[in-house]
Length: 75
Image 1 (cartoon, helix red, strand yellow):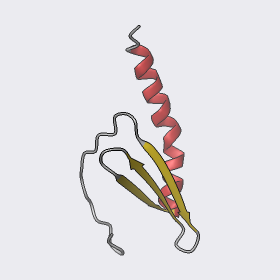
Image 2 (cartoon, helix red, strand yellow):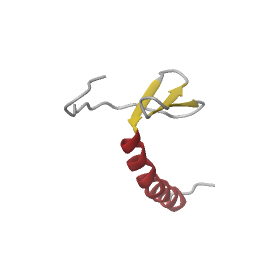
Image 3 (cartoon, one colour):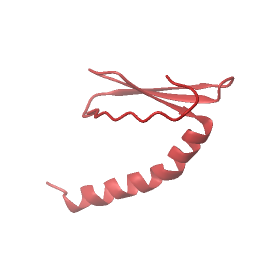
Image 4 (cartoon, one colour):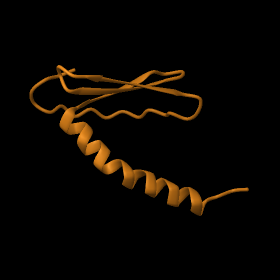
């Protein structure tokens, strides 16, 4: 993890099915970690402000996915 100047990293992670999600909140550093496990483990680490931004945008992501999945509903 780099501290200081922003660092841009691009990667693709496929979280398909049968994963578990664990979360940890650290008071001292005000960091939130989300860990997806099940095959390949992935950790997303947010500063407090970053997590607030993530939360603020999450409802739009869920609404967009729900609308798209409803459009392509297969019985």
